[in-house]
Amino acid sequence: MGESSLDNALKFDHIDPAEYTPWHLVNPQMLSFLQQQSQKRVDAAPEFQKVNKEIATFLQRKNRKMISLNFETRKKERIQDKLEEKKAEEVTSDEQPDGPIFPVSSTTTRCCGSASITCSSFAE
Image (cartoon, rainbow, N blue to C red; front, side, top):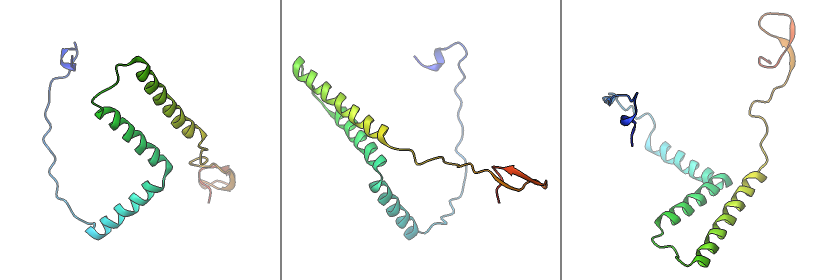
């Protein structure tokens, strides 16, 4: 059942692709360098490693063509899957936040042309 079967469905519409001219402002060597640096950051970051492991697990399960019909075997597989999921959640919950993204520090400064006031967003 799609949206078209609903009472207030929108009619199908087509939008022509936008015309543009690629500028090619980044040379291939720079692009290659940036891709290598990005790959190094991805390889070093534990968050990316966790996501890549989850993707691999998902693809493995998706591509699995057979599952056991034996109740006990299947039960063990499901328990193992749940343990792995719980372990992954514990790793995520153990991570400490880096701190506030925008730390607020109140300072006394001239702000907006007025005399000295306490201003947290326009500190000099």
